[in-house]
Length: 143
Image 1: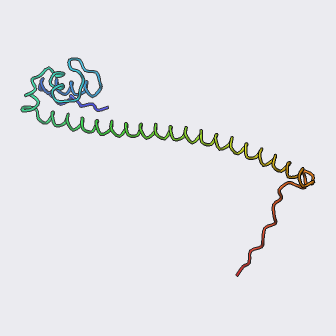
Image 2: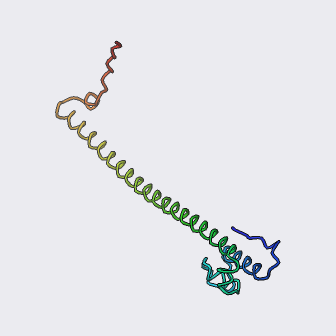
């Protein structure tokens, strides 16, 4: 959170503006709506808007710089949150797809087992002889 020090300020108007900036950035406005703009800052500080735009332009500029940084930070956080939600949705979809594939695999395994038993019955061989066997690997030629 941004905190602007009041230590070296003796002017009451500047102190009021800085205190208002601190309240707005903390999200605890007393007089304004809490929106981060120059008009609301003037209302929060209980000063005329022209005090900010003509007399204390350094404080107005400082405020606007920090508002811009705050907005950029919020936009980045929003994009990160959106990306996170998108990843969660993709993860959920992938889990559902994996469950679907596992069920299909079980179905195929059962079908293959049944076909193997039927083949054994039709050919007159016992179930053990009808099982699929792996062939030995061929030796690779080194050249």
